[in-house]
Length: 146
Image 1 (cartoon, rainbow, N blue to C red):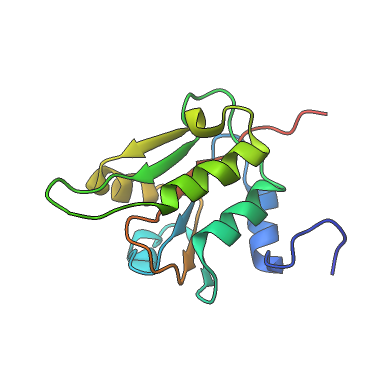
Image 2: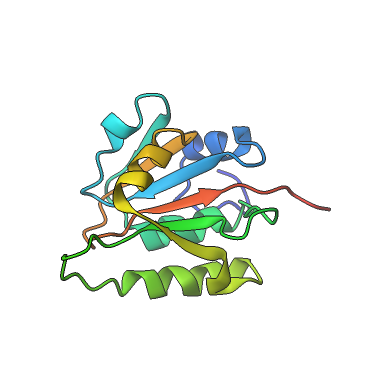
């Protein structure tokens, strides 16, 4: 165990977060996301017993968001015609605001199939047991400034 590292961050996840460099991206996926097929060229980390908000909160305690892009956090857009509410997005924005001064301004949306294409280029995908629909979130890593 280490001091200052959220207990939900496994040794494998901690190693991946440390390995990632500026502009690398990581996806925190909901339980419906095809993590294994999207992550064929990425590291897939299973966190099935956890939801996206708790993983997001833990990661942002140690992970700087990219300040060189307008939207370092991206959510999967709801498909036209899908009658789905996304209150979890408000939770994400509250969490992000705790760690990044841009708050909700740091969050963008990506069309579903474009999100899949972007996810295929991510450094890692964290597969959670999140049951909310359209609960996938992609983070772009920034730099640590002393």
